[in-house]
Image (cartoon, rainbow, N blue to C red; front, side):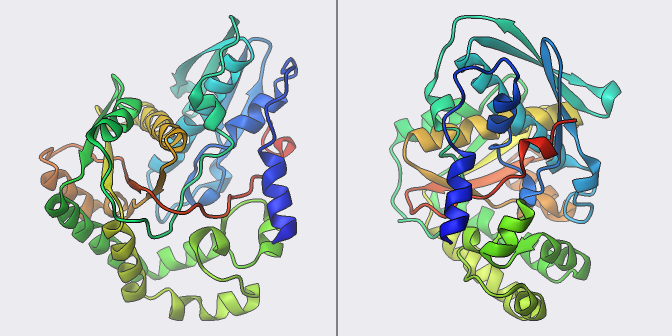
Length: 335
């Protein structure tokens, strides 16, 4: 774990003062959230723009058959990139590029440097799949989180009432149960799990057991016992305890169901995650309720938005930090 922590910390050193070659901007962009930590992105650096492109070789076709999460991931990286560029005197403007397979072009123009609280939170942002303290947050704090996430392209649903949290939790558990009984889902999940620090360091990607609150074990043993330990009931019980310990749930809903709006949902999440980090709060995705189509329809009805697609769902509150995830080298993600 000492070597793991050293590597994780090295990824999160302060942004270089001189970003004329743009590579350190890419490093900050890659500190964004991404599904299963697959890091399905490529960055193409130009004279006055950086393109954030999908890397379809790293998609997850079982949990994400329409590449929804992949495009959300591009939005997360885009938001980090714009914040980092602004901190070094480059105003970034994002434009979705359907002609390039759904990439995002971030055009850069000289401006006055401005380090925002969101920019300063980039190295510290991360999900915490721990049990939180169960205490409610002030209305002002919840409103600040909601404001950070909302945009012209994305609606935000905040759920803090216990009865509504329980109703939403029931759908998260239902989605979780469907997934953990699906052999294809389990095989894909196991492919991306890194059972100990050595395996995580070698890969630079995937879900390190330590980041999910599970013990590190030899990979050969982890692969052998995975289906017995990660049972539907055990995972649902864990999920229920985590959600019930949270102060609230947030659901992001794009105003259209297409890749351009999925990117915007990713940007909205990233702003939320950075705002939560600035406020000293923890959060984690509970996307099971949006990853199973039949359950997603029930969630839309529960939220009072039938016919629309809930895109991302998270819990938030006060709780402990978890180990930070790793990233591949910048050289591996520059096109």
